[in-house]
Image 1: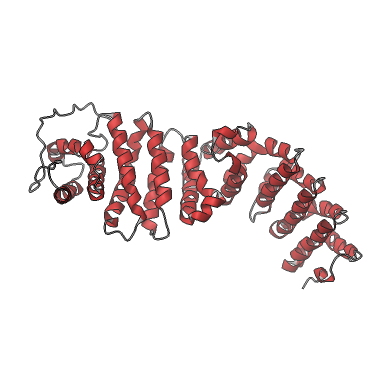
Image 2: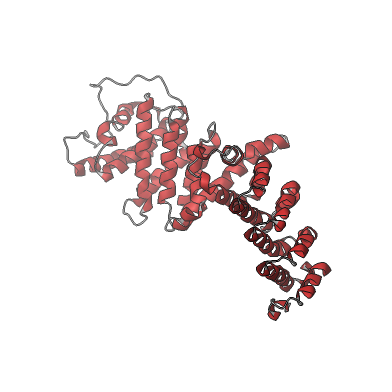
Length: 432
């Protein structure tokens, strides 16, 4: 949509109402305002973009509906009806908008966004109107007009926060689809995504938020999947380097500045960066495979940190990424994989223990990596810590229980050797 240089009508310009609708002003009761607005809503709903005569006829009415009387009206029903009218006005007058003031447009879209909070209660008698409002906004991509506003990010952040806060398990697939359409068009058709807007999406992936609202988590996850797939489709014929860069353009800034540059102030989610990496990997491993080369140096550095707890946190993260089913991270990032394997010999007992526990999942999900793991498990089978020697045996036994072919002769040899360890309980040697 564009901003036409259309002159606002003078204060005494006549407002034409639909047939049967009397003037709507602050002098009449709320009930009467609602009654008249319902007829106005019906008129705009029935109009289409080709209705040139009606568009001109009701232009002053469209401007009137964006006045402070309506946008600041305390009555919930009045605000909802006005929001529905405004959504239809943007549809009818597209690609131009009848509102020339950027400040007015911001007020209108913030007003419409506030009304979308009504989507939360699916049992409300007004829910169908709230759904109509959402559907209309998504179908027309009305919010895309805000790209021309200097402070459009304020509007988008409020919109995303609202949608993530109202989504719940009572919503059907259509509601979720329209929310996704609305947000993905903003992400994919704008010039970029700011850190604040990205935080609004990513915060829903953090375990604490995920547990509070599973539907918001699913919505964020699906939104990220959709935007990545759309980018990849658009650049299918572009070189690999450019492809990787564009695929992660809405994430790379965050990870580069937080992990690589160590800037914790760039995002409110900095302290949750490991949780976010894990979640993004589960959403789309290819996405994280693209991000990982940018972070490999810093992660390798952290694996060699003097802080045992910091090394433990990185080992836990990488164990989940390397060990995940269908993960190709170990083959695609060999230097990082080799650096990770070095933690089997870490001086910090919890780090060695975590590494050994990881081996169980890795053997079962990635038998092709058994050769890499064997030598490190061999060393740990002689670890001075009983708990680690015990977990080496448990790791091999668990893999063997799933499929004896997962356990090579060397690993079985470790088990036989540990039968001499009187502190290891006999039941761990049963493979059936």
